[in-house]
Length: 455
Image (cartoon, rainbow, N blue to C red):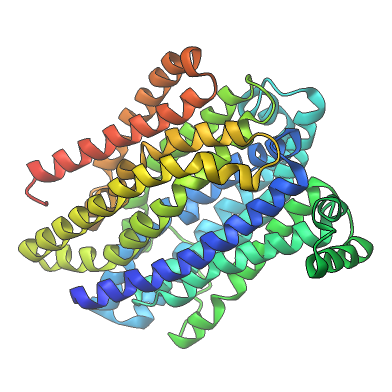
C-alpha cells in the first residue's frame, strides 16, 4: 500500500476510533452516574478480565496479528479464494477452542474469582463477579468470530467496517444501560433538564431495572452488533466458507506456528491486568473502577494514535517484508515512530494537567481516585503507543518470539514495581508500575529493531 493510502487508512481508522471513544466516554459517563465509583462497577470491571483475556489471546489479539500476514500472503500469491479457504479453516478451529474454554471458565467461574481475579472482595461481591463473568463469556464468543472477520477484511485492505464495529459495540452497551439499568438514578440527577428529564422519565417507566446486570446484557447486545455490522464485508469480498476442521493444512500450521508464541505474548500482557485487579481488590472500594477509568483516559489518545497507526501499517509492513524491500520498510517505520512520538509527548503533558478539571465533571464521588490513576497511566502513553508499531514490525517479519521475550520482561518488571510502589502510593502505584514497565518494553523493542537494522 502506498504511503498516501496508509495515511488515508490511518485517518479513516482514527476517525472511527474518535467516534468509538466519544461513544465510550458517553457510555462510561452514564455508567458512572448510574453506579458510581464503587462496588457494583468494581464487580463489572473485574468480571471482564478473564473473558477479555480469552478473546484477546485467541481471536482478538494473538490470532489476528498472526493471521493478517498469512492472509495477505495468500491473497498476494494465490488470490482471494485461497485467502477465504485459509480464513475458514483457522476460524473453525479458533471458534471450537474458544467455545470449549468459555465453557470451562463458566463452570469454574466462582473458584477462579475467589482465588485469582479478586481474592480480597467480599463473598457476596465475588458471587456477583462470577455471575457477570458468565454473561461476558457470551459476548466473548461473538467477539471471537468478529475479530477473525476484521482480520480477513483488513487483509483485503478494507478498514471501514472493522473500524465501525466498535462504535456499534458502544451503542449496544449504552442501550443496555438506559433500558436495563437503574435509570431512576439519572432522573434524580437530571430530571430538572427539560428534554433530557422527560426522556429519562419515560425510560424509567418502560425500561427494566436489572441493576449492574443491565450493563452486562448491553455488552452481549453490543458484541452482537459488532459482529453483524461486519458481515456485509464478507459478501463484498466473495467470502466462501470451507467446512473443514484440521490442523494438517499447511497454511493453518504456519498460522499456528506464528500464533504459538503470540498466544504466550498476549497471555503475558493480559496477566498484567489480571494481577492489576488482584492487587487492587485489597485496597479501598472503587480502586478497581478508578484504575479502569484511569486506563480509559490514557487509551483514548493511545488508540487514536498508536492502535490506528499500527492497524493501518501491519498489512503494508507485511507486504514489504515479504517482498524483501527493507529500505522502504525502514523509512516507513521511522516516519511512523517519529510522528507517533511527536504527537504523544505533548498530549501526555496536556492530558495530565487537564484531568483534575475533567474528572469532577463526570464523577460525583471518586473523582480524586480517577484523577490520580489517569495521570499516572498517562506517563506510559508514549510507550504504549510506540509498542503498537514496534510489535507489529516484528510480526511483519514473522518473528513472534522477540515480542514474547519483551512482554515477559514487562510482566516481571510490573510485578516488582507494583510491590515497590503500592506501599508508597496505594492503589495508584499500580498505574505507575504499568506505565513504567510498558515504556521499558517499548524502549527494548526499539533497541532490538535498531540492532537488526529494521528501523
